Structures are given as C-alpha cells and as structure tokens.
Image 1 (cartoon, rainbow, N blue to C red):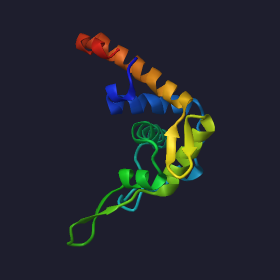
Image 2 (cartoon, rainbow, N blue to C red):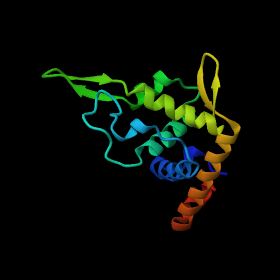
Image 3 (tube, one colour):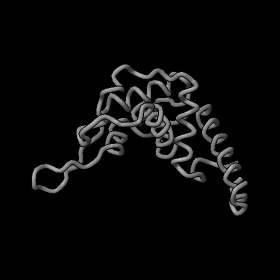
Length: 150
C-alpha cells in the first residue's frame, strides 16, 4: 500500500481538494475577499482555493504531525519586501488555517493532542493512504517502473 510520501504533492492535493469539496466542508463567507496573509497583496485568484488549502493543511498535518497552528502559519507564510531593505518573513493568517483544521476535525480526519498540536486520526490516515494508493496505481499504469510502490 502506497503512502502519502510516495505520491507527488500537487496531484494528491488537487484530488483531495475535490474529495473534500464533495464532502461539503463548510466554506466561510469571507473566503471570497480575504488575503491569505500580510505578505500577499491580493486574495487568491482560484475560485475554490479554500478546498485546496484544506487539503494542503491535511497533508501537512499527516507529514509533520503533531503540529500546531503557529507552525502552520510560518509554513504558509512568505516574504515581504519592506522598502529598500531585504525581505522579511511574514506568517500567514491564522484564521484560515484554524477554520480549515476545525472543519477537518468535524469530519473526524484530524485530532487534537493536548499541548502538542494536531495529528491525523485513524480515519484520516486511512483516507489519505487509500487515495495515495489510487494515485500510484494510475501513475504506474503510465510508467511501469512505479509498480514498485504499489
């Protein structure tokens, strides 16, 4: 059985975003006009960026868990030029990450560990590993060398 480590992140995140959208994760009203952090100038161009961010947060918790919201804020942050000075790191907005984690907790995919952060639950791990196995099987059909991972 393939794991999340074995598949390309972009393919996994797009497929997982489609699945999360079909499971009716509640999309907050403010997602149409909010910036993702102080380091960006405009809101995201993608219409369904919320589901992509939820899928990305889900994957990061799987890979790096237990992980807290502040750690995820620095992961999703970026650099912002300040005048003629060098770029300075700015953290991403915490409300976006917090709401994404709460929605994943409602579905039962993420659990809170007291004092440490969030980890992926058994149900969430099962979902991600099955999706990774499906993706690796599709990729192995195109490239037979990848059958080693399935």
